[in-house]
Image 1: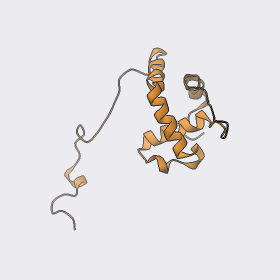
Image 2: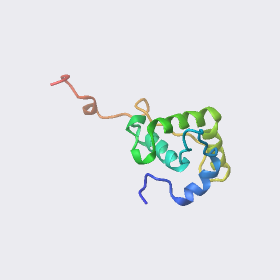
Image 3: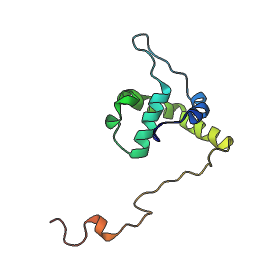
Length: 114
C-alpha cells in the first residue's frame, strides 16, 4: 500500500461519511474512494487539478465532486465526525509565507537576476 492512498481502516471510517455514488443514465457513477484519494493528493501536493494522476479518475470529475461536497457541507460534516470520534482535533493548521521566515537566499539574494 503506498502512503498516498487511504488505508482500508481509514476508508472504513471515512467511506460511510460520503454521499452515495450516483451516476446519470448515460454514465456510471465513479468510485468515491478513488476520487477521494485523488482529491486528497491534489490538496496535499498543491498541484493543479489537471495534473491529478489518471489512476485516481478523471480530473474534472474529481474537481466537480470536490466542489459539490464543499457546497453540500460534506467536508465540514466529515471533520466534525472525526473530531467527535476523537480521531483528530478541531484545530485547523495552516502555514504560509507570512508566518514562516525564510533565508534571504531563497528569494534570490542581492543583485537580482543573473
